[in-house]
Structure formats: structure tokens, C-alpha cells
Image 1: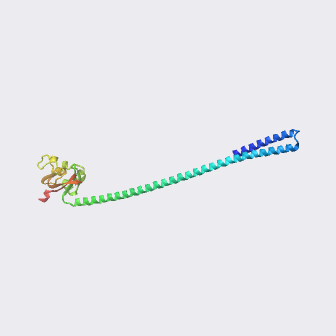
Image 2: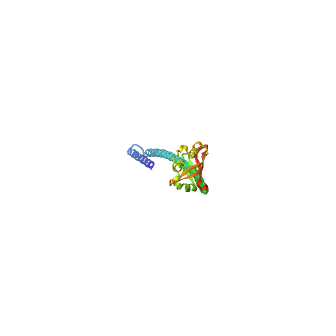
Image 3: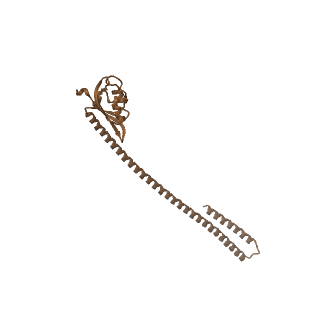
Amino acid sequence: MRGQVWITSIAAAGFVVYGGLVLVLESIGSVAGSTAMVIEFGLLAVLLALVLSVVHRTMGRQETTLAGLRAEAEAERYRSQQMQSQFEELVEKRVYELQVVNGALNREIAERTQAEEEVRQLQKRLELILDSAGEGILGLDNQGRVMFINRAATLMLGRDPEELIGHGHHQLIHHTRRDGTPHPMEECPIYMAYKDGLVHYRSDDVFWCKNGSSFPVEYVSTPIRDRGLLTGAVVVFRDMNTFK
């Protein structure tokens, strides 16, 4: 639009100049009419040639500019398409990776849930076996704390499981000898089993109940090993009063 206005202005200026020259020629009386006409047409031809030349150059520059703009727009469109394509590929890749990770996580959760259920079932069966035994059974860690206890043991000791689990067995049931003297833990055969790794058996010892009474016991303390390391002991005992 700006180019068209500029061309129109040049043409108008040219014709104004042309009109002025014609007036000058007409005012010169010494010039014959035919000669003035030739000059007039010559000037008009030159003026038209000049205007056409300017128009041609201007249109050429406009075409070049438009061609450059079209090329730039096409290049920009191509770059945009490339960027969009790369972005879509990246999104697709990330979605796939997330799907893979999510699938692996779901499998891991399912496997862990199944493993936990199997452990619960195994623990339940173990508890049933322990509670079916007539002897008292204690499971101890390597610090002498009770990890599990069966029903027969709680009945003989007169204690609820919660009073024993997590607490030291020696301080609760084996702290005093038959004659009433203190029984040091370091001399306890049960303690020695999870320290020296040997099986210890006694048939002339006593255990103490919650109410302060005691009963004669026969017991065997067997060490527990995990990958070669001593991790505790299992104590199986029975009340000798029931076997008299």
C-alpha cells in the first residue's frame, strides 16, 4: 500500500513537471507549432518511460520482499512443524516410560501383597502349631527378649502374652534360684544358648509366675542361627509337677 502511494506521487510530480514544460514551450513564440508538438510528445515519452522504470523497480523490490517473506514464513512453518513433531515424540516417549514404570510398580505391589499374605498365613499356621503343643515354648532374640510365646507357656506362667513379648525373659521368669538366691543372667543356661551357640538342658530348675509362686521345670534351650549368626534361642519347657 505504501509503495502504491509512492508510485502515484512520483507520477503526479512528473505530470506537473510535464505541464510546466508545455506552458513554457507555448509561451515561446519563436518555436513553430509542429516543432513544439514534437518536443511535447518527446517529453511525454521520456516522462512515461521514467514513471514506468520507477514502477518496474518498485514492483520488483516488492516482489523480492514478498518472496523473502513467503520463504521466511515457510521456513518458520517448517520449524514449527519440526518442533511440534519432536515435542509429540518426546511426550509419546515419556508416556511409554511412565507406562512401563507403572506396570513394574503394579507388579511389585501385587507381588509384595501376595508375599505379605503368604507370611500372614505361615504365621497363622505356626501359631496354631505352637498353641497345639502341650509344652511351653518361648522364642528369644539375642538380647533375651521374648519374640513369641505359645498358649501353654502363658498358662503355666500366669501371664498374658503382652506382658512377656518385647521384655527380657530372665527378669520376669528366671531371676531367682530354687533356694531363693539371685540367679545372675550370665549363669543362666537359657542365656548361654544364644551366646555360646550350644544346646543347654536342665531338669532341676524353676520358673517364676506373675503371682510370685514358682514351679519346677525341665527345659532345653536351643540356639537360633541366621546365615551363621546367632540371633536368639528357642526354649521348650514343661511343668514337672504335672509329670509326678
